Image (cartoon, rainbow, N blue to C red; front, side, top):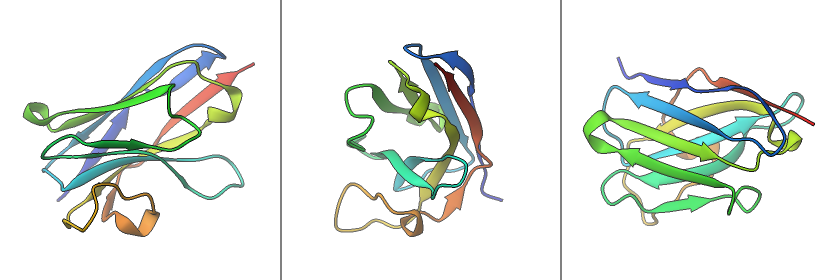
Length: 124
């Protein structure tokens, strides 16, 4: 059974930092982070290719968040700095099996497996 398990969420003040982890039970073509705030659709945050670790981040987090991976540990990370209240959401890890024509995938249907999510709350 394929598993993706997120950890590292919590409550932090605006301007603070958190690091999320996603431990996976297998390798993927790409891994991604998405987030979903109450009453809103799930939105793309960042993605990384497994083989060569190319990354792509959403405009709303570029310059503040960093995505990285540790292939030896089958684990992906999301370092979040300069957090804002609008970053408050449940953050989900997602895995894509298929190799496609591009190195970054930003839509929910692009991914095949999902974790249960971890809550990130940023207070003002």
